Amino acid sequence: MRKDDLATVRFMIELYCRGRHKTEKGKLCKDCQELWEYVQFRRSKCPFGDDKPFCSNCRIHCYKPEMREKIKEVMRYSGPRMIFYDPLVAFAHLRETLQRKSREKKMANGKNETKGKTNATGKTEKGEDAK
Ligand SMILES: [Zn+2]
Image 1 (cartoon, helix red, strand yellow):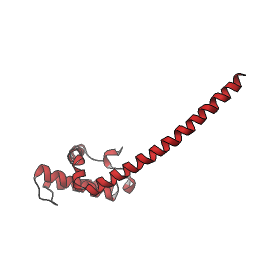
Image 2 (cartoon, helix red, strand yellow):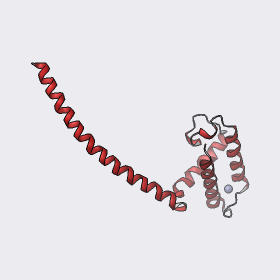
Image 3 (spheres, helix red, strand yellow):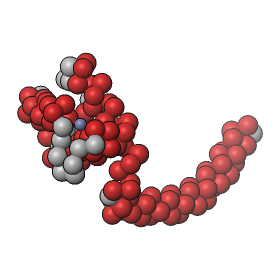
Image 4 (tube, helix red, strand yellow):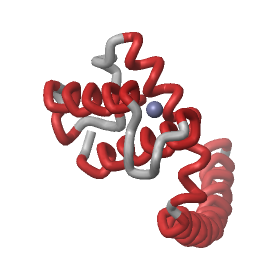
């Protein structure tokens, strides 16, 4: 898990705690503080170190079941709400999606042309083979 991911996890736990446990902004209740400390502790012990993918994708389930359930609940709660709290990130995603779509469109057009040519060549070759 990279540093950015850890910051995201912290953000999500805060969001969850504020929404569910009515904790003040920027603070965590006892339970959530415990979870946050656990996340940091596990990260420091993780064999993947900084190259590790986001923990929910990690094949090695390094969280103990109780904490895993908690972090899952946090993700479920905060995941869909992130977009409202971080519009810049949301905007960056949208822009990238649009750019990718226009790139894919261009590539698709190119592919169709190539495909047509390949098919034509294939037919000719087949015909010659048959003779
Ligand atoms: Zn809490």
